[in-house]
Image (cartoon, rainbow, N blue to C red; front, side, top):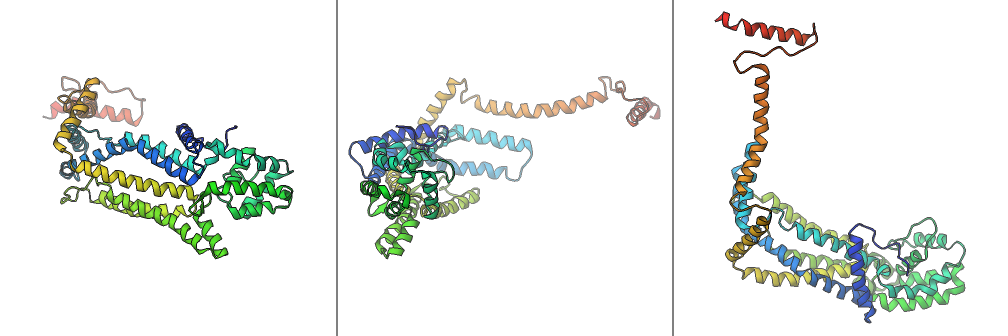
Length: 426
C-alpha cells in the first residue's frame, strides 16, 4: 500500500504516529471494525502506558506544594532588588532549596517533552485514520478505481468539497489528486454527502458502486448514531434540516461532555501552589492557573464543534481515564510519607550528580563560583581603566597616541600638564 499523503510529516511526531498507527491497525485487525470503539480501546491503551509518567509528574507537583512556602519566602526576601548581586544570590538560595528536596528546577519538563509528541501523534492518527489502518483502504478500492477513470475527476471532487463545505477532507483544492487523496476525501463524507456524490452526473454510471461503498463504511464510522468523520456543527445543521432532533442532541453532547470531563479532570489535579499562601508570593501564578482552568475547557468545547467526532470521543475518553488515574494517584500521594520520599528523592539525585562529579557539599561552592566569575570581570575592567590612566608609581603613563592637532590629542596634553604641575600647586 502506498503511503497516504495525509500522514503526519512533522519530525519526531511522524515516527510516534507510525507506532501508534500500528497499534490502531492491530486493534482493527483483531475484529474491532467500529472506528469509534477502536478509538476508545486505542486511547485506553495509550493512557495505560503513560501512567508512570503521570505518576512521576504528580509527585513533582506534590513536592512543589511542600516547597512552595520556602520558595515564596526566598522570592519575598529579594522582591524589588534588581541588582545583579541580589539576583544571583536569590538564584543561589533557590538552587540550594531544590538541592534540599532533591529535585531539579526543570521538574517535570522531561515528562512533558515525552508526552507532547505522543499527544500530537494521537491527533494525527485519529484524524487521518485511513493513513494508518490498512484495512480501511480496501473498502474504497472499487470506488477509487471508477472515480479516477473519469476525465477531470480532480476538479469534480474539489468543486464538490467547496460546494458542500467539507472542512475535514485534507485535500488540496487545486491541482491533480492522487488515489490516496481520493480515499481521504471519501472517508470524510457523511451519509448524506455520499448520496450527493452518487448524484454527480459524471459519477452516475457507477452510482451503485458508491452506494455499496457507503453502506460498507457506514457501520464502521457510526458511533451512537454519529459519523465519527463528521463534525458536530455539520451534524447539527443536518439534523436541523431533516428535523432529526435526537441527532442534534447527540451532536451537542460531544462538545458538552468534552468540556465537562476536562473540568472534572482539572478539579482533581493537585495544585503546585496549594500550600499556605498568606504572603501572596504566588498570587499572580494562581490567578493565571485559575484563568487557564476556566478557559481551556471552554476552548476545547468551542473547537470540538468543528473537529471530527472521533477527536471529541478521544477528548472525552482521555479526560475520563485521566480522572480515574488522578483519583488513584491522589489517594496514593495522600498516604505517602513525604519525609521518606524526600530522602529517597535526594539519594537518587545525589547518585546522578555523583556520576557528573558533583556532590551535595560543592553545589553551593559552584553557585558562589558562578557569582564570582560574573563579578570578577567587572572589577577587572575597572582596574584596567585605572591602570590605563595611572601607572604603579602613581604618575600618569605616557599619553596615548592620537592624531596630531586633534581635540583628543589636545585634551591628553592638558591632562599630562595638570598631572606634572600637581605637586607644584601644593
